[in-house]
Length: 234
Image (tube, helix red, strand yellow):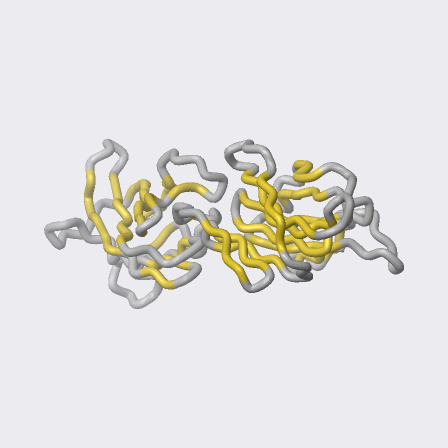
């Protein structure tokens, strides 16, 4: 079952039983479930869409998800254990390798961790969507809602990060540094342009950019289109 803490409602993701419960993992908008029949399904809990990661077959002992990557450990036909992963974002085929008997698998930062070993590849940082905070503010000096202070969920810490504010004509009115920690980037704007003047009351567009040693920040799905949204000075 998946419980939504916002709506306080539950939904069934799979058909497991008390005697043979499913193996599952959560990351961002994704819930990944390994069913008793050996199949693995990744569900987008926001949209309700599902994708089959692995068809029914060999039993899955452990599963994890990180962005477009799903990793798992399964019994190999004829004995032994395979550790596998698949990149659903690129649509690439499943990659398998022999591994030690393990009940634990973790996928993070483009690395599949299992049985005390690390099988890794570089993976660019991801914007996880749904910026937190108000989409409007009133920089009038009354001490209430005078600054725009969003928090952008990201997959890992960035070495560079900036938020660019543009007006309706597309002209840059301010560029702001956004300090990051693991899991989030934050910015604070006082409603002034680069010359220190208050901007007019109007809609504006923000664009988030950043990078680390693995590459440029992109959407959680791996898409490289601009990460942008709107805010209003009222």
